[in-house]
Structures are given as structure tokens and as C-alpha cells.
Figure 1 (tube, rainbow, N blue to C red):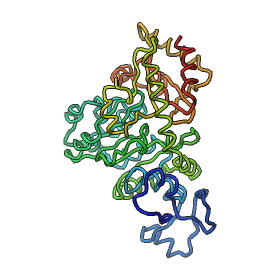
Figure 2 (figure 1 turned 90 degrees about the vertical axis):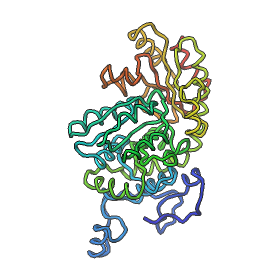
Figure 3 (figure 1 turned 30 degrees about the vertical axis):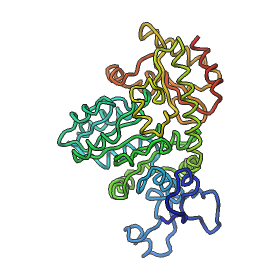
Figure 4 (figure 1 turned 120 degrees about the vertical axis):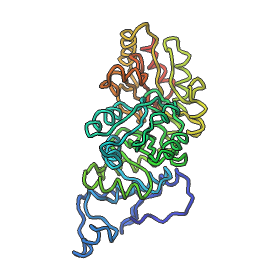
Length: 401
């Protein structure tokens, strides 16, 4: 679809404000919200040409919408990809990718530190259809290489990971995948294109849960995949049309507007997260802090190189405890003592959100899977928002003391 004409080589924060589908005849400044499931065609021949793909245009909501298209164009431009396709949630975008690229007998290599639902989707749900998978340590390039088989079609990493903020070497894993004739996908949800551009480091597909930072205020569910025109339109779009995991126009409009403030939000929230992480690292009730911006982080140098010298807005920490039962009790004490910050499993909001991964996002994993992922009972994840850092500290102190 045609876009508003813009000069070449604009910066991402400029594209985030201006790139969209062409304005209507009314010349609206804020992008229009098109709430329609169907489109009236001027003639039977034009209708036939659009459905066959011989003519560009909209036909049915499952195949395209101007508001959704604006979001897709804007995100693709910010990620540096040729195209993007929007979905109803982050998990549905992973589902679309797996359905489009894999068949029975294929093999996937993915990080054992990924989001719990992603692990279950690949290792359990797709296993029922004959798709094989191998989990590997996030940061061990040699383990990734050793896990690749002749039938490996996809390498899938999340960097930084949820919730331990482990960082993988994107360029190195991209090379491994391509040497094996496979594709490499990066979940860029935590860093966003403001801090990290996996496409520039060689990855083939960038996945997003737009529910998080792209929206930025916890209002709607959304997902997206960014890739080449050939992958988006040749592999993902046909499956999308048949499976129907489409993004609703209203949700697309909300996330489209959220992208306009993504740059300033990510920079501000990353700065606050760094200050909070440094403070937690010195607290006697905390045994360890996981945050890429800290020099104590095992992949600090790599993360600074890949993430524009910032650590992102998510951190996690372990409370000190003598055993798992006590650790869980102390973690719950911190969470139950909150008066300002929110106990909430989402992230990417302007409000600071805390959660207990072992009983929520990773609660349905086996104990062995949780241990392999490093998710202990005393771990608390903090998605830092825009409150004053002193107020964040004081709220955490109630439980830590």
C-alpha cells in the first residue's frame, strides 16, 4: 500500500512519528482508525484482480487493513526490515512463524532461557505435530552449534531473556544458522528497535510482542514479525490469511501511536532501571541482580555493543534465603508489601511492574526446566516504569526490610 511521501535516511524516532499509510481525503494529521471488516469494490473485475493479487488494494479484514498496515510499515522501518506482519499477540506471531516455516520432521534450536510460554509452545505443542527441538544455554555459542542437525530449520533466541536478562551474540548465531541453511529469529521485545537492531547483525526474522514496549501503557495485545518481503508475503501472509491470527485495527492504532513515544520512553526507563539495579546490588537482603547495564553482568560488554550502550528497562533480583521455601516466602513478602509499584505479570508499561516468575510466567514448566532456565523461588522481575526512582526504592524497602 502507498505511504505518505517522506525523504530517505530519516532517523527511527522521526519515522516513529511520521511513517504511515496515505492520508484519506480529509487530510487527518493523526493516523485514521479504520474499523471495518470488508471493503466495497468498484467492479467485479477489480475485486477479482485484488483477490488474485494482480492489483494492490484491500479486500477483507483478514488480509489487510489500512490502520494495521500503517503499524506494519512503521515497525518495519524502525527495525530496518523490508516488511512486517502484525498479529493478535506476541505468542500468535511465534505461532505464525512456526506454522509457516516448519513441518513434521523439522528441527528447532532455541534458548532454554526463553519465556515460559515460548518453551511450552515449541517443546510440547509443536512436538505433537512431529517438530523436533533442542534447548541450549542462551550464551553458549558452542552449544548452539553442537545442537544443529541436518534437519534444523530455525534457530530462535530472545535477547535479553525473560527474566534473567541473558544476552546472546546475535551475529555469531546468525552465522551459525546461515552456515547450516537455517533461519535465525530474534525476540526483540525487551530491547526494541530503539536499543537493538538484530537485522543489522544478520538475523532473518525479528519477533515482537507489541503488548509490551511498543504500546507502552499496557492497553492492548499485539504482535508482529519483521523480515524480508519474500518471507513476509511469500511465507507468512498466506498462512495468516488461512489461520486468521490478525491484529484488530483498534489495537493496531493504539500500538501505532505508542511507537511515537517509544524512543523517549525506552531511554528514560533504561536510565531509571540502571539506577535501581545499581542500588539493589548494594542491598544486604539481595543476593544477586540480573541487569545487562551492570558491569557484574556476565555479558555486559556484549550487551553494551548490541544495545546502544544501554541495559534496557527490565531487571531481576534474587532475595537472600537459606532454602527454596524461605526464598519463596521472602519474595512474596516483598511483593505483598508494595504500595506504589504494581504486582503484575505484564511488562513495558509506564508503571513499574513486578512479578514472581517461578509461580507465573514459568509456573507451568517442570522443576527441571525451571532450574535449567535459572528461575529460582527467590527471583523477582522488575519492569521499570517512569516513576521517580526514589519512590521505587522506598516501595521495595518495605518488603526487603
